[in-house]
Amino acid sequence: MAKAPRNGPYICGIDAALDVVSGKWKGLILWELDEHGVRRFAELRRGLPGVSEKMLTQHLREMEADGLVRRQVYAEVPPRVEYSLTEHGRALNEALAPLGAWGVERIRRERSDLVEHRDAAALPRP
Amino acid sequence: MAKAPRNGPYICGIDAALDVVSGKWKGLILWELDEHGVRRFAELRRGLPGVSEKMLTQHLREMEADGLVRRQVYAEVPPRVEYSLTEHGRALNEALAPLGAWGVERIRRERSDLVEHRDAAALPRP
DNA sequence: CCTCCTACGTACCAACAGGTAAGTACCCCA
DNA sequence: TGGGGTACTTACCTGTTGGTACGTAGGAGG
Image 1 (cartoon, rainbow over the protein chains, first blue to last red):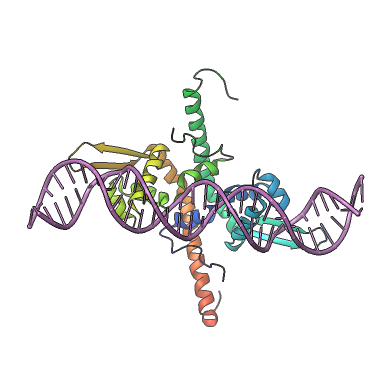
Image 2 (cartoon, rainbow over the protein chains, first blue to last red; image 1 turned 90 degrees about the vertical axis):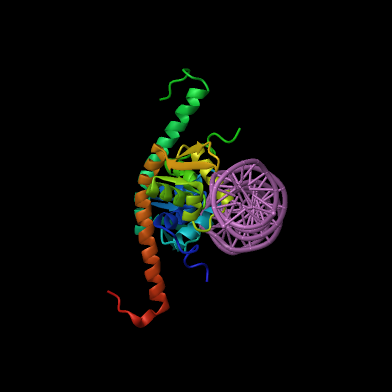
């Protein structure tokens, strides 16, 4: 068997959810798939600048095992595989939305701190 | 210098938020501090069964650097340090709430899957 | 004929996260 | 005099994560 319940018994729901999205690219994969609905392997790879093919497959397989991603294989001559979110994957994405909003706020804070410290009154950002 | 903007420039808000909560105990620390308001080091350690002192200090320092946790040191004879959440830490916790709910759902699903697989033909499907 | 495209699988390796154990300096209690 | 409690720090070791590079099979295009 692979590994049915991923890690040890979870202490709380945050644990269980973070376990599923921890991984360098999982958040981005979720976002890509939610944005575009259906994506092929190479499309995802181009959408995540810097990802290695190995990690992309690995993460996609884990997310499939976790029931977040649906994998549709077409037995065609240039191989074609389409990935999309399952119902649970979409629910997870919705649950991640407020976290994303918090993150955007954090980025904004961080950047204004940088601006304050580096070149105080120099450049206006669009 | 330590490391001002933790990792590379974030691609989206999810990235920035996950960066801040990734770490084996950060979610639990957030939860503990939110539950109790103010906690001392040893109280936190007792509240997170299995955490090592090293990781607890390390995580607390990182969360302090990230502006999530306030660290109040009292110059007393048995040293006393009190930790609490900042405004941003509390906001993060609120943003984590739906994720926690999703996680609880996932745990529930996983457990009922286990039951289904273990004693398969026992219970009728609704 | 040679190369690139598809979507991977595999082997090897470096970096890092996290655990263990010990030390620190001071005080209280028995 | 010894043990325990406070809040750490430091050194060392291991397991996991992720990156690099290469192999695969068939077809299309130059």
